[in-house]
Structures are given as C-alpha cells and as structure tokens.
Image 1 (spheres, rainbow, N blue to C red):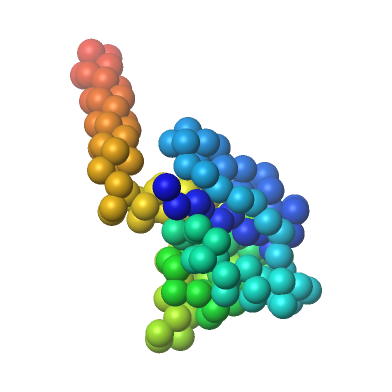
Image 2 (image 1 turned 30 degrees about the vertical axis):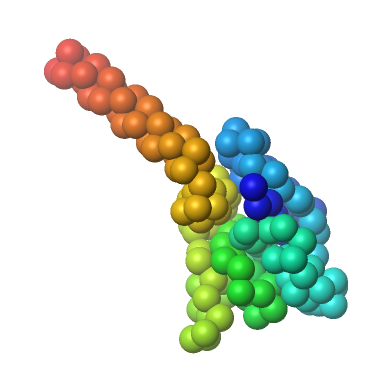
Length: 162
C-alpha cells in the first residue's frame, strides 16, 4: 500500500494535523509526518516532494497557516495529489491560509479542504488510494454506511421527542 505524507509548515500546526493522523491510523494507512516550511526550508520541501513518488507515497497532505504556500510549493515539485489544509491563525482566522491554498495557478492543482479540516484531508487521501484498492474502498463504504445509520438513529430520536 502507498504511504501518505503529512507535512506541516510548523510544529504548532500539530494539534490540527493530529486529526488527519488519527484518521490514517483508524484506516491502518502507512504515513510519515514531517515539518517543512515553504519559506524557511524550501530546499528540503522541494527535495521531499521531488522524491515522494519514488519513496512510496500516493498522496501528500500539507498543512500551513498565514501565507500557506506549503501545499503549492510541494505541488510544484510533484505530480502526486496534494491536499492542502489551511490552518487558522490568530491574524485573519485562517482566511489568509484558505485563499493562499486554494488560489493555485492552472497546471499546479492543490485540493483544498476547510480551514482546520484535517480529518477530511485524510479521508480524501484515503479515497485517492482506494481508487486502486478494493479493500480500502470497502472500508470507506462501510464507514459511510455507519455514519448514515447514526444520523437516522438521531432522526428517529427526534421523531419520538416531537
């Protein structure tokens, strides 16, 4: 099975990124976690993304706040799917990171999830791997069905109350 790379621009992003790590653990997906900055360690970020495919990765999750160039910098150097997590900062509540992550030039795509949306980033990465892995696709289908059943149980509870 391919690995997922989880890259954050700063270790202060770990509380957000931990939600992605938890989802990857839940699905038994192999992963590596790194701290690379698009601005402070551009060579290391570039080298990682240039070599990610040959190093067994199937997708890259990149979390960054403020200017949030990390996902774009990684995507510029890899044709693997890159999923950006804009991280909420105290300055503009993550809107700056969202806009920086989602506004990529034509030819360098970055999939972007919600501000602090790490769990969905992990699920999207898993869905990408599941395109060629029927067992993983089955796990995703089962999880979706279980989530639907929980909602329907809550609906029945509402019907009983009102």
